[in-house]
Image (cartoon, rainbow, N blue to C red; front, side, top):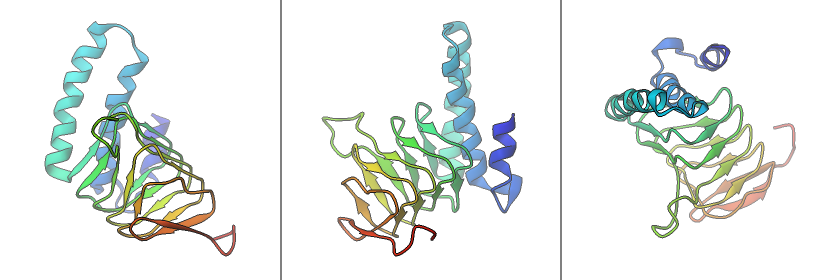
Length: 170
C-alpha cells in the first residue's frame, strides 16, 4: 500500500492521472508473481489481463506485467506508450507520450532495455534491445536509443548519440 501512495504523490493530477492508473494496473498484475499457487495466480492474472486491456484502450498505455519497475515512475502524458515485459526501470523515472521501451529483433523477443534511476525519457523516444541506460540520463524527444548510455549523459538523435552532461548536478 505504501507504493500506491509513494506513486500518487509524484502525479500533479493525483487520482485523475491516466499514467498513475496504468502504473497501478501494472503493479496489481506484477504482484501475483509473489505467489506460486495457480489457484491464486490464474484468476489474478485473468483480472489483470482485462484491466491491462482497458488501460490500452482508454489510456493508450501497455506495461508488461513481468517488467521490473521501481518507485515513483511518472508517465507524464498518456498515449502510445509501450513498456516491454522484460524491461527494468529504476526509481524516479519520467516517461512521456509515444515512448516505446522494447525489443529490437523478432528472433530475440526477450531482449529489453534496463533503465537506471532518474532517467528522463522525452516524447516519442524509442529505447530498443538489450541496452543499458545509466542513472541520471536524459533521452531527447524522438531519439532512438540502440546502444548503452553511460550515467549522467544526454542521448539525442536517430540513432541516438550520447553526450556527457555539463554538470552532474543537472
